[in-house]
Length: 384
Image 1 (tube, rainbow, N blue to C red):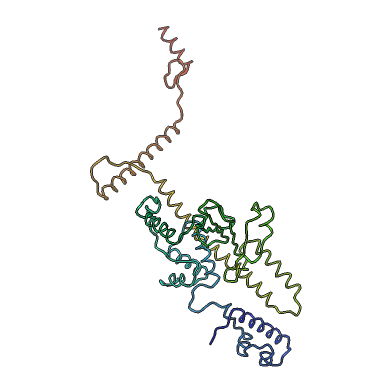
Image 2 (image 1 turned 90 degrees about the vertical axis):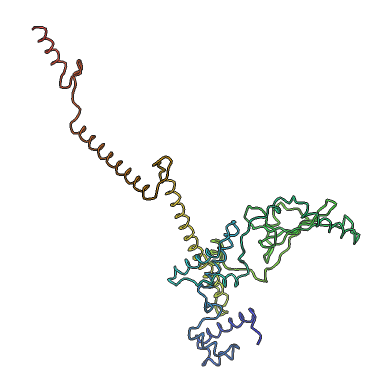
């Protein structure tokens, strides 16, 4: 039995919503009459009236994370990869556990990461290897000599002229990111460039993965007039889920206008807009959970680094060998001696402060004397 396409499922969903609305407005006396009128299965219509959700809106069976949580996790993995820090499978497992802990659910199984990577073609698991030194230097003649010999023999065999030899290359760019271009067709915009062996180049061919041409591309863009811009659709689908605050505000305003203008038309467009809005909000919340966990891990690592920097380096013995117990005894005795010296110093300073400063004579320097007593003492000595 052939599976229904996405368009057929969407049309049936619209008819189901209209049938449910008609039944609530008492336009039909029975569920069977409404199902026949809108050409929908009677059992499906009955289940929807009893509160059952559609398959596309429900979480697939045997999956720990929801579709929105998995979508946020995939986006977070791709963001880390674009920054040059691709996560390990263990890191992905910890991210999933953080999302589940926010809902009070149990942790994922040991094989969850493997099945998660298989479900999404955007991410792949690869072994990290050291960069080849010969590839980095490209100076080994034994490696490149064979390739040049093959090109020379091919040109001679088929009598290819030099002006008919071209080199084409493709580079991808992420819009709004100042970084080195990456080869391949992974990014949002790609450029195809061809260069002839005589030294002249073909006009660049710019490819955007969008549905409509934007006026900003042609107004004061600085591009030459003879460059070509073309559009392609990735799997004939463009995401309408809001990803930024600006897109979220636009989606909210769009929903308000649709609610004001809605009278007797199908509510499917409003429901689709609400679904996209809810999906965007949930994805942002899940992304915030992952960022919170990352910030917490960075704070713990920073605190550990500060503790290592604050830790004093004391020399306890020069040369020789010490057991761990002997080293601990030396440190403990040193701490006791330091504490005793601190207590003695505090007691001596208190005693000096309690006695106060004793007066001395300004002429002879004897404690308890002053200048008057000193003069009388001198007079008595003279009289005698």
